[in-house]
Length: 200
Image (tube, rainbow, N blue to C red; front, side):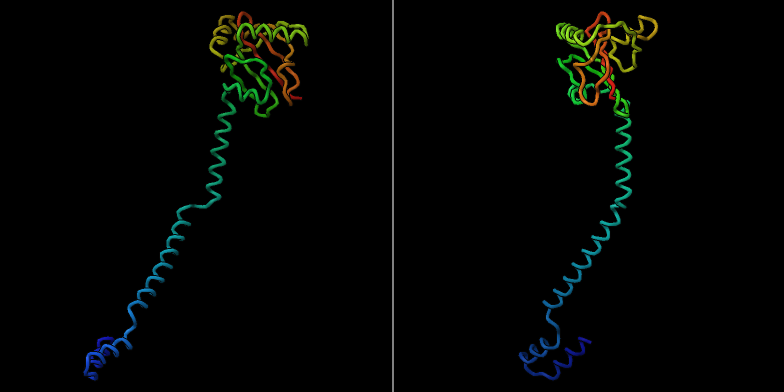
């Protein structure tokens, strides 16, 4: 159709100037076509990109649920693992002297803490001297846990009944809220202490 219009214009018009004017008036400008096409292509590309992004992301509910499950699994794994960071232990109980070695666990309900701490000989004597002020010592036997330090596990194996013997003292110096009941036991012939605290 456009070719027929151009031919009819050429036949009717004799001068080249008149031909150019007539063609320009009947054929749309190239600039207008380019802008119309560009605008349509941009809208189409943005729409397609948005749909693609939404379809690839999956539902946010599924992603949130999978993240919650992963966090719960990490939490359960961490709940069963013994902590070895004295700073973390120091957040829930008072550790009055610098510990040379620490391993501890908190019950899932967060009402009990069991910790094994090793202090220097001088600090061990200070802990005992301070604890005597709160009550007399008592001889006790404590079952060795599988996560206790190797030295204590070996000592419990020697006793034949997987237990550790020691003198137990009131653990008042170790209390931090909510823990207000417990004992600290110095394992015989070592500088290890077993701290057992409970919350009321």
